[in-house]
Image (cartoon, rainbow, N blue to C red):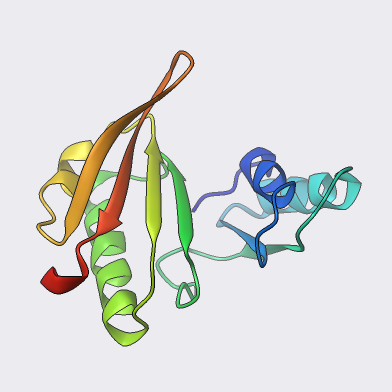
Length: 135
């Protein structure tokens, strides 16, 4: 969500996953993401860059979501509602990693999500997973 220049998209594409989709609303950043994806060496998975608002994009097949503090609190609440609705319509396993969780309280208030702190070197983030019985 908010793929920026595609750095994280490319990182995930070096793993064996079905596909990696970067969603970016800013056309200039989406173009850079696409160029970086085209130049990626060591790719193991296909990459798709979608230039769209993540509140409008199709997330029905997403199994991993990476958020690098992509929006304000209100938009994050809307995203949570969209994710919950998507899981109710298309039940599946999902992991949400929220890096630099400035608005972490928004996700922490969602009773259908479990959370845990994660450290990766000097970096801090939150890992969320849906509690399927609470959907």
